[in-house]
Every structure is written in C-alpha cells, then in structure tokens.
Amino acid sequence: MLKLSSLKIDPEFSAQILPPSFQELQQLEMNMIRDGKLTDPIIVWHKTILDGHNRYNLLKKHSFIEYEIKEMELSSRQEALIWICNHQLGRRNLTPERRKYLIGKRYEAEKQISQNRGNQYTSTKKDGTDQNDPCQNKSGSHITRQRIAKETGTSEGYVQRAEKYMNGVEAADEAAPGTREEILNGKIKAADREICAIAKAPKEQRPEIVAELRKPKSERDKQLASSTKSPSVRVESFDDDGSRFLIGISKKVQGHKRALTESDQKALKKSVEAPADHSIHIAAIEGAYDAFIENWELTFREYPDLLTGPENWKQIEKYSDNLQRYLEFIRSKHLKMLESQRQGG
Image (cartoon, rainbow, N blue to C red; front, side, top):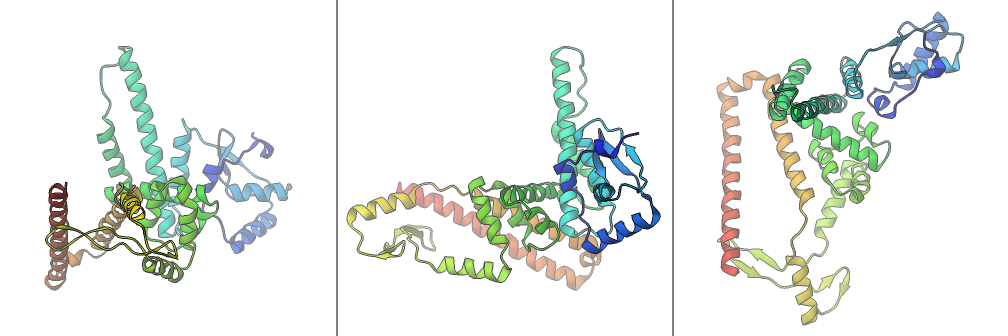
C-alpha cells in the first residue's frame, strides 16, 4: 500500500481541480475528524494525485485519520489529464467558464494522444512494419470533437472554441499567476474573444492585457474611451468611392505642441504607412466570430422553438440579412481599397 508521504502534487493536474470554498473545506475537515476516516479514497497515478488534493492536505494535518489510496492504470500523462477533466466535468457547481476550460483541456489532451499515435504510425511505416493508416490527423480531430461534444452535450464548434479559450486562460495565468482562477470563478468579467486573444498576443504584452481585464468593466470602458480620444496622427484615409487622399498631419504628437518640419512629416508618414502587425486585431475578429457562432448555437439549442415560430423567425431573418449586407459592404470596401492602392502606386 502506498504511503501518504510518497504522494506528489502536480501543478498542472491540481490546476484543473475546482477549489473548495472556505466553508466547504471547513466542513470536510470536520467530517474527517468526526468519522476518523476518509469516505472517498485519494486517487493517484504513478503516485501523483488525480483527485483528493484537499483530503491529502488535511490528512497531513490530522495523522490519526484512516485513508485509502486508489491507483489508476493510465498509459500517459494526457490520459491522466483527460480523467481529471472528465471527473471535474461531472460536478454540478461548475461555472460556464470553468466548464468550457475543462472541455478545452480535455480536447487538447486527446489531440496530443492522437498525434502521438500518428507519430508512432509514421515511424513504423518508415520501417516497413505497418502499411495501414489508422486515421488522418484532420479526420481524427473531427471525430474527437464530435465524440467530446456528444459526451458533454455541446457542439463540435463549441469544443474547438473551448480549446482556444483554454489556451487564452493559461496564457493569462502564465503572464500573471492567479488569473486562471479569477477567470474561471467569474471574478474577471471578459468576453470569450478577449480571453482567446491573450494567447495570440506577444508575451511581453500579456501582463498589461491581463491587468486591464482585472479592472471593473466600467473602468475598462472609460480607459478605452479616453484612449480613443487621445490625439493621433492620420496621414491616409479613404472617401466613399474608395479614392485615396491625404489629410493634414496633427501638430500634437505625444503631448508636445510644435510645428512639424518637412523632414518630420516625411519620417512620420513613412512610420504610419509601414506595415503593422495586426495579429492582436485578427485574433479579436476571430474571437468575435467564435463568440457569435457559439451564442447562436447555444441559443437555438436551448430554445429550438425560435426556429419554428413565425414572428421569431422573422426577427432572426432580419438580423441575418443585416449581417449579410455588412459582409458584402466589407468585401466591397476591400476591393475599392485594393483598386485605390493600385491607382496610387
């Protein structure tokens, strides 16, 4: 039998566990002292705790309490993570944020297992020992998403977006330890697209992004509003028909008022026209798209009568048509800007 002193806590494993409230932990300790034993075993894999972290810590405090340790037979670290995620997903008191995070974590682990199997297949095929392809990566991921969606009562798209959300949460926690729990318990109020975008932002910018998200929404909005009002320099713009024209350069740059010399204007124009890294903006657009699909899928799944009621459907069609018109407007604007650039070049 394994001894308590031989058990280990893995930070990644324990990060998937829903932490108890003070009252819950106090009640657990009182029950253990009253009964003199654990009612549930501590579950481990290779001496690493999968379930029972809180019981383990209390046992170290009260050595007289009887306990049981149950060992799981799992083939890899990824399988251990999948077991933890599934076990946690069975809890009833999960926030929507934590549930999404766990589904994303499970999907990531299952993909890694499939990828490892694919690498093994590639290796054996080179050796000439295996001629049958078990599954292609893309179709394998598709099947995995379908299975997880069915088991969790979600959709394939939701599972895919959950992984992006999980990556954003982990990137935030890496940038500012403790952020993971603030997001998952709902303390940090942020749209999914904002969380997803963190993982795609440069590492040096992530602490600043997290600090902004930690602010109350009202303060965040005020900060954003004030930043848009600060003086900016625009050299190039487009009129309604897509033709390019130059506009005046602001004389207020970085808080200093002075007349710009001709060399200043040339340098500033060159700087403004330089290609920008829009990875954060693309990530925000992608996040908005994901959130849009997710919200519609969840709404229609919870309220299927929206798709059958004539009045409801009329409203849905209205917004769908408006969306279609907006997309056509963006495409038209894109073509006009390309044509304008060709003419200007």
